[in-house]
Each structure stands twice: as structure tokens, then as C-alpha cells.
Length: 243
Ligand code: GLP
Image 1 (tube, rainbow, N blue to C red):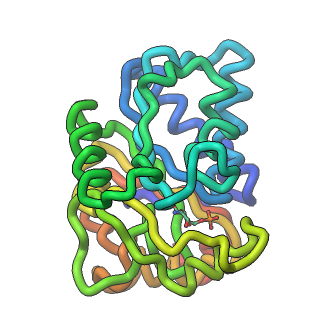
Image 2 (image 1 turned 135 degrees about the vertical axis):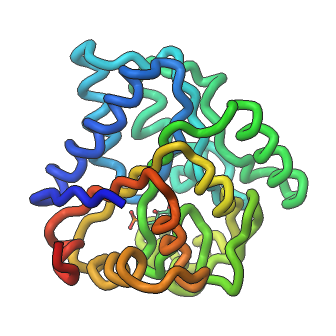
Image 3 (image 1 turned 180 degrees about the vertical axis):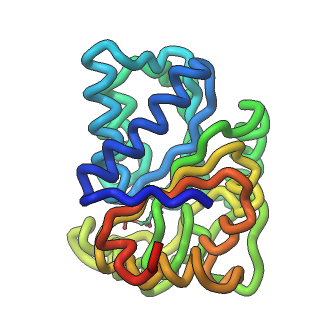
């Protein structure tokens, strides 16, 4: 596990964008695993800027996203489909036919999950997986549990996640209760993993996840077992660990 300390959110975003850019430059037809949430927004903005300057070409890149809310359609501004188009896909020259997310509007959870596992397998595997970190240690929407769920599955979101996501919706009732998410095994199969984390409110979970016991109760802790993980964290997020 490599930990790169950034000064602040902007510096974290720039450093993460450096790593993603290097991946695209070294392997133009790479498969990027992408994440949503507020943390990677600055990273995406930085990548868009590099594309606009002519320094990055997304035309051969394939993307697979970690997760999607169950029951939100693509036009819903809170869907992860909308988020990805708003922050990245609509602003760079990625071929939209090669951008994939779980189908949140498929009501049959088994079908939605199996279909998505087939999509991921067909890409040939993720070269670089970008991750954020939930306050309870979730990655994607793999919530704290008794076991690590391997493949794409439908999750009941925890109260803490529903509360954390509340700020994006008009009322708590509108926050979806379920989501489809890539499983831990799929995330762990990525050749490289890049996790971005910012802010003092994440300092405790950073310590627990990366310097504590490996347990499905803190899903991100499993990343300690991956052989190519880079964590780009700002000083505030690292304030409870000594490097
Ligand atoms: C969301 C997403 C995760 C994300 C996490 C943290 O619920 N499903 O992929 O990493 O929560 O979000 P944020 O970066 O806004 O703190």
C-alpha cells in the first residue's frame, strides 16, 4: 500500500488525476473502474481540463462504474449515470458505447447483477480502479457486513449511508434504499487500485481501514491485501495516522 499525502482537496485531485492520466497515456485502450461521490469530482474536473488542453485522449478507453442506485432513471440528477455524464463522459471524447454502469432501472436484481458481471468480464478486467471511501468504510456500495460479497449484488443501504446521501436529495424519503454494486472480489481483481480520500471527517475511518484489522465490517480494509494500491489522501484525512 502506497500512501501519497496531499496538502488539501485540490492537491489530492491533481495527484489522483496524474495517476489516471499516466494510465491512459501508457495504455490508451485501458479499462478504468470509476467511482462517484463528492471526493472524485475534482479529479474528474482535472482530467477534463487535461483533455481540453489536448494532453489526454479517451477515445479508446473503456469504463465500468462501481455502482448505481436501484430505481433511479438516467435522467434523475442523483443517478450515478447522470453524475458520470455530468462530470466526465459528457466532457471528454470517451466512446459512450464503452461506458458501463449497472442498470438501476432493471427491477430484477439477479438479472441486473449477472448482466453487469458479464459486462465487466467482457472488458477483459479493470486496469485501474478508482475508489472513494464511505464514512463507515464502504467501497462502492459494499456496506459493512459479516462477509465480503464477491460479485455484483443488490445491497440494502445502511442508515449511515442514507443519512450521508440525504444532502443530495430534497427529502430523506427520496434517498434510494437499495443499490447495485460491484463486489469485493471484482474490485480486488483490478490490476491497480487508486483510492482518494479527503477531509478530517474521514480521518478515523482511514485509520481503521488501512491501519486496523482486515474485516468485512470495514469493507475497505480488504484493500490491505491487494498488491498495488495507492491511496491519495489529504493531510486532514491522514491526521489520525503517523506516516
Ligand atoms: C457513496 C458511493 C461511494 C463513495 C462514498 C463516499 O455512497 N457509493 O462510491 O465512495 O459514498 O462518498 P463521498 O466521496 O461523497 O464521501
